[in-house]
Length: 301
View 1 (cartoon, rainbow, N blue to C red):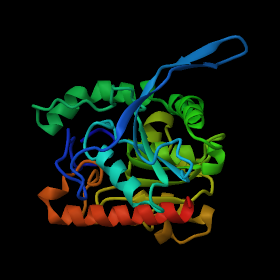
View 2 (spheres, rainbow, N blue to C red):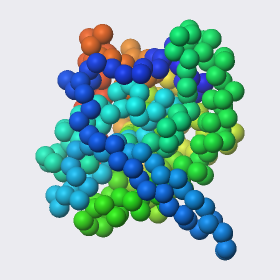
View 3 (tube, rainbow, N blue to C red):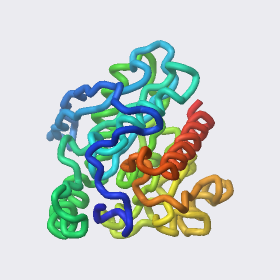
């Protein structure tokens, strides 16, 4: 677990043996080159290079019609199911060979959570909590992530695609911490984000960084959003919860359109759980994938 995950969550998973039939990553890791951007009238801000996992259709393919960004949990893109999830998602989104799925490593090789594998979860959290909070609150602030999205990742994508990225558009899926990044990205000026999904999202990261969660919900605007909370996730993001109510009212849709709970699952079940160990987990992973594919095809055609 990590400090942004609720009690009883699925712990860190260095790797999994299978996710919805996929057992080995099929994509490639590329390097998004460093850039210098203006930070004031006479100053520039260097943005270091960033690893990015790329799978599905090639970005320069003339048939490309959809780009999906996957934002990871606090353990980073090399952990758990992230890469296999991206592979499966790219293969299921139609039409065939129309979607490129990218996992930008916003942590640049230094994940927020770095558990001590040989210690029990609770002891590991106690020992690593100060460093976790520093990285979550200071090193990976909303402002720096937003700068990476708009001034590093977006220009790089535009340079790779054969047409205007604003016409192709972006959508996103986020896990845990990445669910907060997803919500933030929906309201980010200059980012052509069409819609976003949060699988067991940790919107409480906003509380850690800014002291209040409610303002962040308003920042998502009216773009389509889907939350897939686990049973032990916050009531605020389930049907009847205040975040779900606010998101539904802003979009003039039902709360059930915004939030679909998986009551028998634990936070982290999509991004970290090995479905081969439990038939119930695999079944729910499949159901979540079906919900995500349907949502993205409807809102990012």
